[in-house]
Image 1 (tube, helix red, strand yellow):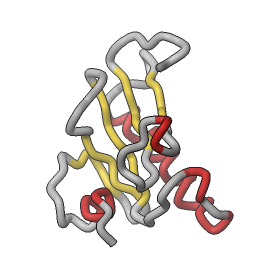
Image 2 (image 1 turned 180 degrees about the vertical axis):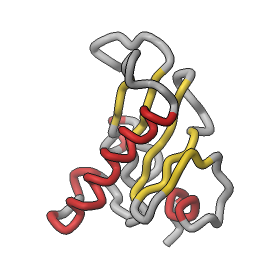
Image 3 (image 1 turned 135 degrees about the vertical axis):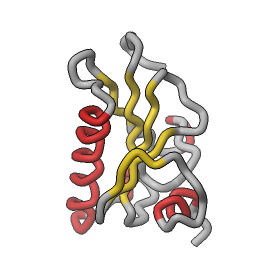
Image 4 (image 1 turned 90 degrees about the horizontal axis):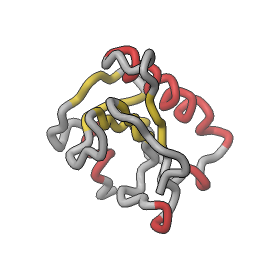
Length: 113
């Protein structure tokens, strides 16, 4: 498999890793759109959110817990932070390995886009 994020998870590609555990890796985005922009990926390859299966429930839950860990580690919880999942090309997904963007450090407007 030639997946960029699988290579990050396997340490085949260098990334500025914030933390990892048995299930996820969290690392700083190379093209940040906010003062804090960290990606949380499952070590298991899941291409898109709409292609996840019931067997992926643990991996998906670990990604969400990983976003909480990022927020705690970077002291984002008090001011707030945004978590974004893009699903498919029209949403802006460019790496087809599910990942959560954890964004913080500035005010965000609604709706996004």
